[in-house]
Length: 101
Image (cartoon, rainbow, N blue to C red; front, side, top):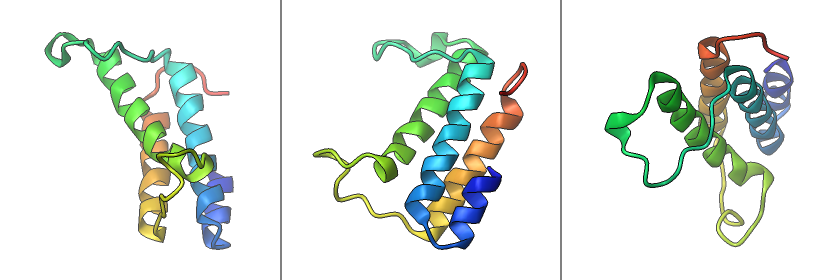
């Protein structure tokens, strides 16, 4: 996250969001959160599965900054959005049980 903040302060929003996404991946690995099948009923999800859904949604949003495919090529992020994604990454790291690498 320190790297993401430095990139943000240097004005490199895409790199900052990419670094935040990397932190989200660390949280996901440490916590063992898995990608859920699309038909998974939200009411039947465990606490860990619910955190996993939050993590997947945040990673998906952050992916637009590091991938330029047909869907994401037009994505543009503001500084506030970059700050929000860095904050979400920090929150996921805080929520993740287990050792972080």
